[in-house]
Image (cartoon, rainbow, N blue to C red; front, top):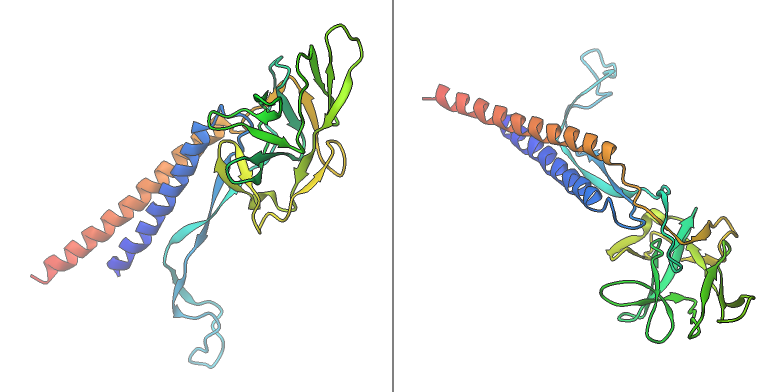
Length: 267
């Protein structure tokens, strides 16, 4: 059955290659604001049952064990790790970090759909709207918040109140309220790039509330959340995955050598 060895080991090599891709993406985004790392999960494939457990033996008694040979492995899923990243103070007035659960809501102007992000590098577009900074397009915060012209200071409180102060004035005036969204199953969100997540049937519908209420986290001004990728752990996973790939490739070589030996015996 050396032919089966080739196919079984090939599934292991394919699975290890996928895990290497996941690790590479994690390491590539080690400095991406609010990036959440992924983890590859595996499951075994079908089994060839030469003797099924519980089959009656010669004495008509159920066998306590069976003879089952596995046919390999495959990637079951890639699971997101939403643990909090480190909070880094930036001193920039429009930088925002989410401490705890929740996502900022942004409107994609191209598709007119609501996206979700934990990246709080906010900016102001030409119309004065508060947007998420992007090289592609500015995505307005939802619900929309417009910053008046010629303000001397912007303040964002822990519960999401957006306050501004005009030149020469001492008091701040509230001009808007940030909201955060949470999901029953955040692992079901789809990553779409540009630090954005998209709602799916698996994630459930977004549940928006003010920061600090209904289990949501708070926001911190002049700070950003760093990636939660742990370089040391990723390097350890990289080494073990590489060794797993090598072991599976050696199983392929062993199966090939056995087939060659059998072929030579027939000569």
